[in-house]
Length: 132
Image (cartoon, rainbow, N blue to C red; front, top):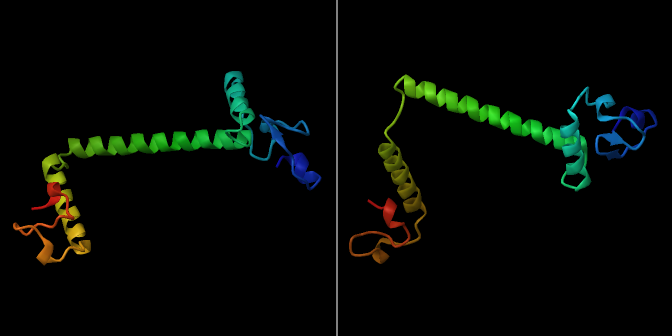
């Protein structure tokens, strides 16, 4: 909704960065947003193509992607700091522990009674790479 739509208590249809009543995105209740011309054209294209219903949705999705990218960078930096501080685990050890956890989980759920296990006592339902 734009401010105009709120004043007349009705929905306002957004077409690109402008609503049908002439209010632009920068004048909307969503705050001020001054986009470069190339970015405005790109957002308009996303809305016109139907990929997004409004410019606000397209811009919000872009901001969410930026937030995700920032979180990923922060996580990577934290991981680098942990490595620098000697807080790491050998990759073989990690995968060995994961295989053991997976094997234990599958054994808990394994419908194969011991009588149907192979002659080595291994279940045909557990992938060989995680069996002992």
